[in-house]
Amino acid sequence: MLTPVSDGPAVVACNSCRSSAGSGARLVAALRAMQARDPRFSGIAVQEMPCLFACSEGCTIHIRAPGKIGYVLGRFTPDADAARAILEYSAHHAASEDGAVPFELWPEGVKGHFITRTPPPGFVAE
Image (cartoon, rainbow, N blue to C red; front, top):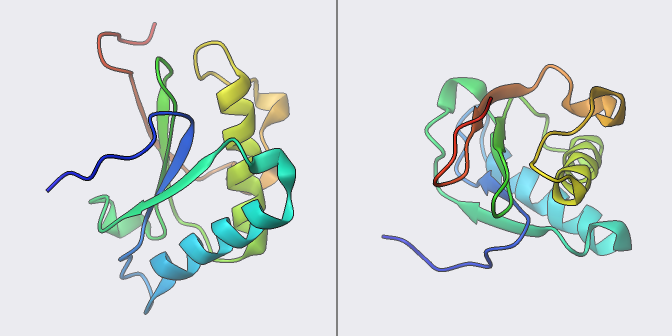
């Protein structure tokens, strides 16, 4: 049931989102296309899996990196603007010490999309 992937900084996207036909797969495609166009995002893996169990939030992603707080975001439109905002935030997240990104660095396109934050294994957030 589990597939090994890179343990580095990643955006894990739901590829089976049912908010509209194929929107999860379209968001994955937009993320990969944006990553291919912009070398700033080469260190962020774009990973996909069926269903993140946040179906009511539509087009959901999980931003994660080892030893850092992770975030689940949703309610995205599967397009280049969303992909750019997600990858920009992910780059800031990867560069941060513990996963906390100062609000002034948040791209406009992720504001209002946060659903949960998840502590890394062996930690809780203060």
